[in-house]
Structure formats: structure tokens, C-alpha cells
Image (tube, rainbow, N blue to C red; front, side, top):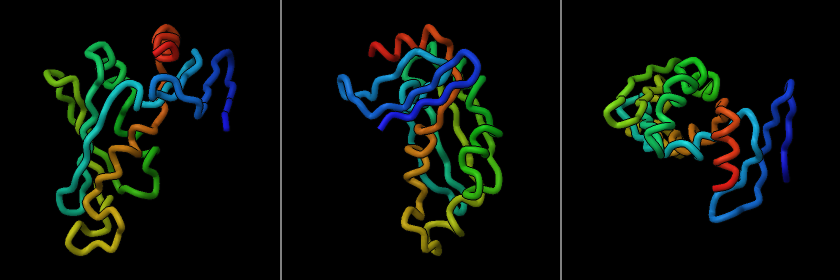
Length: 141
């Protein structure tokens, strides 16, 4: 099932059709982070730790600009009490601490994902604005 939203002169389409193992994108103003980065996550007490690593060095400045602590906090609204971001430019990566995300932590939490492993996948589902040329290139991939 395709979902299309139009705002101004930009178009965002989420479509489940697959080409080469990747969901196709139509040129527009936004893309899912999964097309730009990979991620890993884990736990430290009651805090989830999510690393977001650019797939290409040219994507890192886009991640720095668009994947802000405020945007990540909105993405995880109701699930975390706060977000901290650390930049790792030598690795083309960002690291996020998601505070109070684990209902007390792995040893006492009754959550199914008490170690926060799913937070990386959830972050990769976030949509961010990208230049139109990049959106066109991702659509061809």
C-alpha cells in the first residue's frame, strides 16, 4: 500500500515495491534514514544507545544537519525522556543516548526489548529532508 503526501511542491512516497532488495523511492523532499545509514543499538542501564553510521561519507553532513536531538526526541515521543547526540566525524557517525527508554533497564524491565536493540531499526524508519538530486539517485538504486 503506497502512502503519498504532498506539501507545497515536494512529494513524499512510501511504497512497498522492491527493486534490488531496497524499497523504491520517488524523487522528492524526504527519504527514510535506512537509505542513508545503518545503525546499531544497545543498553546502558535505563538508557538506550543508538549509533547511526552514514553509508557514504557524503551523507554524513546531511545526517548532522537533519538528525537533530529534537527530531529524534519527536520520533520517539512518549518513549524517552530526553535525547543527547554526539558527533563522530572521523567515523561519519552520530551517537544518540535515549534517556529513560528501557523502563528501568535490562535486569528489571518487563519490556520485550529490555536491551533496546530495536531502537536502531526504529530510528532508521525516520524520514528526513534530502536534496532532490539525492532523492532521484536513491530512487534509481
